Length: 429
Ligand code: SDX
Image (tube, rainbow, N blue to C red; front, side, top):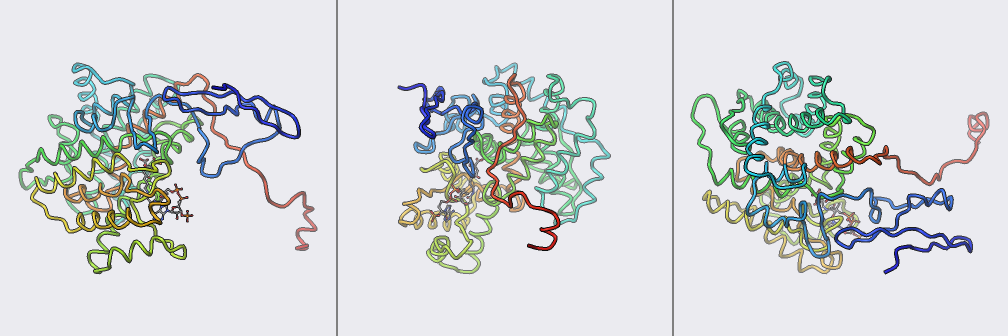
């Protein structure tokens, strides 16, 4: 197979190298294109443009394959825990039992936040969206660690990664408690990562909180499924911000803001609101599907479609199966699950969705389980961010440790006014 591409411009041939990845994906390397030809490429939304090579996550959108460091998501979902997957994504291998114990201990040791940082919660309105709070708190964390957040210092990288992973659940739970006027519950070191979060979210000082292993297992599963997804919108944001050598806290804060968008991680909240609307309004599912097809309506079927998956999102399949299992184990009958299944059925048999390869994505069923776990709807995207955090960190670390790291700075093709004289412009000519 050719290892160069020939580009013919104005009768002249230019050779461009072709690179091939470990999964036989091939790319034309245009690093020297502008120097050689004076031309750049343009690709709005980067549909066809690779920003980097990466050894962390592989996905095949056509075949519905997703692997973290080569391990299929189905196996990790069935056998691993979230903190083990976090280690895998960040350090490139599954930890030994000793390494995992040490990793969990180091996360546990950093779950508390500075007492002064707690005061920041009082500056937000009680109905402030928790994604805004999480982004603000992540970058505010950096003000307490100004002596240890240099991205080029390996020790600083290590402690920043641990602090973010350890404190994210604490801050998320504190934000929730503040929003409902309950006292904040501090981390308990004897609890594992997911149990600690559930305890901080749902226990109250007045009584014992029974940690349900079914809920802990479901939370581990959801966080694993959200942990990384190669160069999606928010991960690309983390990489771009990190490429300026801004500290990791600020890159993560930016990633949280990108994830918040309804076309990205914000979709899980939108799905629940859509299903609730259908349930409460008695609106026919078929009507919603018709509305989603209507070009004059901005409404899209949230949780459907994907930039890369043009087949079933493998995560959606796993979550759909888990939804049935978790709800029946918890003895919950949720009409929204039945509506979701009906919506999927109608859409998947509709030519509009079939022609466009629009399938349920990770956000379509996740909210059903979060709801069953007692997580409030406006916290769903925070849960997505909690899951994605190790992926963002792993991708950032891979970029920062690349000796060839350059600041990210895309080009453009200018289409505005050509050279204009001020006085002429002033006269509005
Ligand atoms: C995530 O990139 C990642 O990896 C993201 C993610 C991750 O793990 O990080 O997987 C997580 O963000 C999942 C996606 C969550 N978003 C949603 O569920 C929102 C609803 N989905 C759409 O907005 C849309 O599908 C996107 C944004 C997800 C993808 O859009 P694309 O690939 O840019 O496709 P497009 O917008 O160009 O749409 C192609 C066609 C259009 O119609 P035509 O112009 O061909 O007539 O499909 C239509 C769109 O109108 N379309 C939809 C639709 N999604 C696309 N029509 C109705 N409902 C939808 N959901």
